[in-house]
Image (cartoon, rainbow, N blue to C red):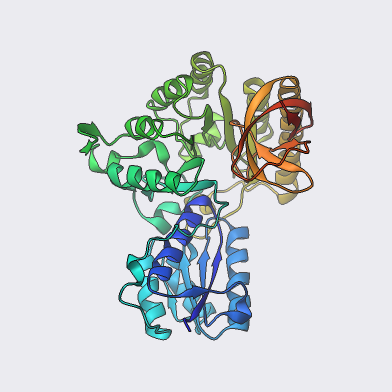
Length: 434
């Protein structure tokens, strides 16, 4: 009987992708997986270390695993802080950083040997995934070259390292053949794809093509699936991506984390600070692609954020009218430059400002969603139960709203179905089958 591995995956979509890769490497080595800690012979924790709440969650997961199993391995972003973890958890078998599946496998084989059948890896099997079968994360690069003062991702994951475009396209085709209907393209800095290798040319279907995000996205757009882009830094090349959205090659969905709107705060964040230019670009994007759904993430209470700075941010939200916004209160992260900044904003003020922004965004979202009542739209079914839960092309899984379908028609997860929008609230839509 094969040894059983327990795996806990924490953090962002990029970490989920890493966990899926690890699962498949372990399966190829003839390991099985346990549903619960008490059934595990060894437990692997793929950690997150981006913000303090994520660090606390990772530490809690490690503690719980060690309470239930004497063999525990830690990998992922928090694993990059090996000295900290060794001091806190000396019983850990191994500590490694992100994207280190091969090192983890070697450690598993050392402490939990298994009899690998010589033909086991030749048996074709569907790729193990943590997401539902009808959508999948597709990571196109690792690391980041940006130097944002609040972020430690470059220290944890290293500098930008793009995958080969041919490798990405092959994986995408495999996923579609395995039943995937939506590909969610992710990286720490998606729009920078290929920058690290000077956009080297690759032979793709008989043509020598530059390894740029616009080229990759165009090739992905030829596949019969929803293609959704995440985490787009506002480079000039975004204009080309908007044109691909307008042409219907990829979903009209732009996830562009702006973080703030005050030029003063953006400057100390080490982010693009010309917001007047940013507003003009957004206007241009919406003219090019009127169907565009615009999502961003913002930080409330960054060190030095005055009432005036907050008012600039608040006015920016009201003026731009984003479709979706994720708002986080600032917190120090070990190793971040911003930790040393003076004029820290109090926790109460951070949360009050966050609540104000969320209330404003709810009003904007409610008005936008109400305008879609009566529309006929194609949605992708995510979950079937008493209520059918689906998503439109304007909504990414886990972070955006849903469409609740009222129907007796038999539907399955992964079905595309046309619906008529019947009602709306601040976040979600109601619909019936058209």
